[in-house]
Amino acid sequence: MIYAGIGYMPLDQSIVFDGAWRILQGQTPYLDFYLPNGLVPIYLQSLFFYILKPSYLTYCLHSSIFNGLFAILSYFFLLTFLKNRTSSFLYSLATSFIFYPPMGTPYYDQHSFFFMLATWLTILQLNSSISKKKAIILGIITSVFFAAALLSKQVPAIFLIPILIWIIIRNYSLHNKTTSAFLIGSFLAGILILIAFCISLNLTSFQMYAIELPSKVGKIRTAELMDKPSKLISITLDSFDYVRLSFITRIFHLNFIIFALCFASYAYSFLKPASKTSLSQLLRRFAPNIKIATIAIALLMICFFYNAFTRNEVSNGIPFIFLSLGLLHKVGLNGIRLISKTMIKVYEKKESYFKLAQVIRKIGPTIFGISMIYFLLNSTFKFDRAVNKTRITSNIYYISQDPLLSPISPLSFLKMENGFTDHVRTEELNGVMEFFNQYNGNFFLFGDSSILYGATGRPSIFPSLWFHPGLTYPELKSKEFDNYDSLLLSRINSYAVIHFVIEGEKTYMNARIKEFPKVYDYFNKNYCLNKSVGKFQIYSLCKKSKDTNDKSKKGNILLNF
Image (tube, rainbow, N blue to C red):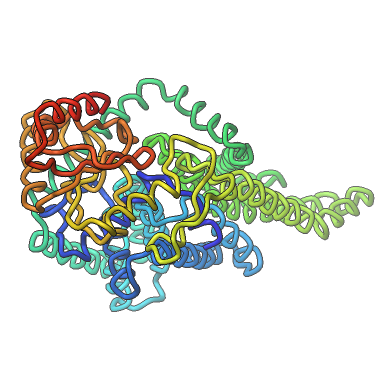
């Protein structure tokens, strides 16, 4: 909660709020409004709004609770491998600084990461010691968590699929009976989830807005990634340095070095299993660490591919980075212990080397552990100062707060940034809300601050959760877009919209009102400028007494949009 209410980025920090407000107002996803992802977080947020009330404080409470739960999941995940409560606690505590604080408010990407980790932790409980009944229950829970990850956001959730397949195949080869029971539970849960989908959602709309449109965007980005992968890798790593997070690049390098050593050890032990030299024995003993090193690099690559494909702020897409570092800590400790044991055995008759080996055995793990924890704490502090405190994620760039919003406002918990003209300011939000406290009637917002619908108690009008051509609504000038334009116009009429609110010349994703020809024509003919509040222009239905000369002046004003 320390950073959650600081700064406001109109697009990203309005989406879940507006989606939850729509649910609370009785709107149904893919029937009354469309979204490419985010189904789970908006339903969860609507539950928070229902129990408490629609406000920015309730909004931030949701993300803060999930941030704490993510740290708890991280602790048990690490404890599975580290077998050390102190190290697991420190690394999981560090994750609480990099999971939700950069974004602050509920976001579908973060929820997807959360349910991915929950899925992974659940399937790790599958082993030969559990009963078939428990295996079936585990299968059901795993399917529910993974479905929640996918319905939060498809990317990064799909990156977990190869890992799940690998775990299932490995478990089946070791204990096929419990794994078979697990798969039965997963299958049953999957069927029930699919049936629930078919009953509750408009499948045609779901196919178009949750599958087809996101797939088109995904194909374009994948083609670019495949075209010049090396360049994209360098750009992604350079972006860490750009936001002063060079420690992440170091973790990347450390990960690949340790994984290479583990892989070499595993390969050597596989190719020369009969060799009895000290080096061979050392490598054979170190080879089992390949499992932990593989998991560490898998966690790292999920973060990397997420940033590469989505091109979001990198500081918002590295929630597994310290989990990966924690696993490297374990591999490093195992390596030092094995080396010291081997040295003691080899140099048993050479006093000077023998004493050195004993010293390494006694203090080597401690020095390495302290070094890793120092690196962890230092990296966490740098991240907190460079990202969380400055609110750099999603271009918030918080410096010092504006005067607070009205204490009776639903947004009173929000503290705004100061000094950046491309963002909404406190007085602008206050001005718009004051206007709608004085005047009745619904309004249509052409802009990103859809949080204003819930803050003023008005129904959300736009058929999609946010403005993103080709993703949240069909590509411009297509037949589907023409139908969408007609749908928007019908929504404006059915909700008896009295006011149009235009937020800036264009939205964050460069949408302009004149790109919607039917709505733009209707707007030009029927609405006149009523009030300007910073970057917000409020238009109201023209009075019948307005002459054509007044309307032509109004039309000239609109040429910029």
